[in-house]
Amino acid sequence: MIDPWTPTDGAATARAQFAEVFGGQPDGVWSAPGRVNLIGEHTDYNGGLCLPVALPHRTFVALRTRDDGGLGLVSGRESGVWSSELTAVGPGTVEGWPAYPAGVAWALTQAGIPVPGFDAAVASCVPYGAGLSSSAALESAFAVAIADRMGAAWTGPDPSSDEGRAFLAQACVRAENEVAGAPTGGMDQAASLRCAAGNALLLDCRDGSTRQVPFDLAAAGLDLLVIDTRAEHALVDGQYAQRRATCEAAAVTLGVPTLREIDPAGLPDALAALGDDVSRRRVRHVVSEIARVTEFVALLDVGRIRDVGPLMDASHESLRVDYEVTCAELDVAVATARAAGALGARMTGGGFGGSAIALIEAGTARPVADAVSAAFADAGFTAPEFLIATPSGPAHRDA
Image (tube, rainbow, N blue to C red):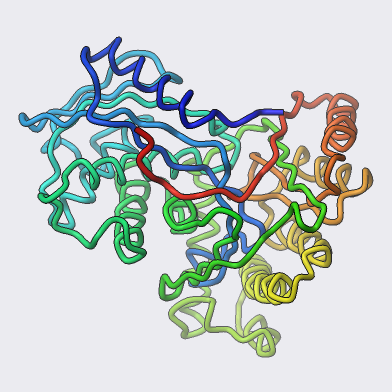
C-alpha cells in the first residue's frame, strides 16, 4: 500500500530540498491533496454534477517570494531547476511540469492579483500519472501558498473563505487549460481546494456551488481501495479533448448551453436528434451519469452508503461502452475487485489508464489487492499499486 506522508515529514522533505537548491529557508510550506471521484465522470465540463473526495496523499510546496519577478522551481520527481520571469509566462510558453505552478501565477496575474516572483521546491506523495489529480494538487498547493504569502497585498476574495477557494480553483483551471494545455473541467481543482475531511464534495459545475456530503466509511465498516493500474495516463494526448469537443458540439445541435440541461426523461428525444452514433453514446453517458450522482447522494443523505455499489458498477459500464475511456487494465481491476467481494467498483478520473476505486469491507484491502495483482500478472500487465482513500481535508498551510 502507498501510505500518505505525515504533514511533518512532507513539510520537512520540501524544506530540505528548498534549502539544498535555493539556500536558506522558505517563507513557509503549503500542501494540497490529490482526489478520487466517487461518481460523476466527464460531467464537469458538461455543467453536471460530480462527487469527489480529497485523498490523504498530498503535494507539499516550500516557497519563498522574491522581489525581482523571477521564478525558480524544483521538484523531487524531476531533474534540474527551472527558471524564468513571471512576465514571460503565458499560453504556449512553458513545457512540462513547471507549466502548472507557473500557470497558476500567470492566471492570478490575469485576474488582477499583483503576484510576486518566487522560488519553490515541490515534494509529493500523490501518485503521478495515476488519474488522482497530481496536477491539481500541484496547482492548488501553489495557489494557497501565493495567496497566503501575499497577505495584505492579496486583492482577491478572502482565500480562507469558500468564495476565495472557488476563485483560486478557477485560476488553477485556467493554468491547466491555457498554460499546461490540458482541457480538463474544474472538478479536480475544486476537490483539492474545497473538500472537507470526512465528507464528499457535491460539486455543481453549472454554477460552481458545493455541498459537503457525509461519507463516513469507518462507521459503515467499509474502506475505499484505490487501484493504480499504472497504465499510461495522459490528458494532453487528444482523446480527452476529443470527448469534450463532441459533447460541446452535441449541446449546440440540441440547442442547450450544456448537456446538463437535458432531462433524463427527455433523453430518447435528444438522442434521436443527433446525427451520429458516437455523439448519441457520449450524450447518453453524460446524462445518465449526472442522474447517477443524484441517486448516489440521495443514498448517502439517508445513511445508505452500503447501497451505492450498483451505481458505481453502472457508471463504469457506461464509461466503458458509451464514453469509451476505460482500458484493459481498468476493466480487469474493476471486474476482479467485484469478484473478490467489492460492493461496487469503477474507474475514476479521466480514464485511458489511471486508477479504479473499489468499495470494500473494512480489513479486506489486502486480499482484494492480492486478487487484482494476480489477475494483472496473469494478463501480463505491469503490477498495480494500491492505497486507501480516507476522505481528507483541503489545501492549507503546513508550516
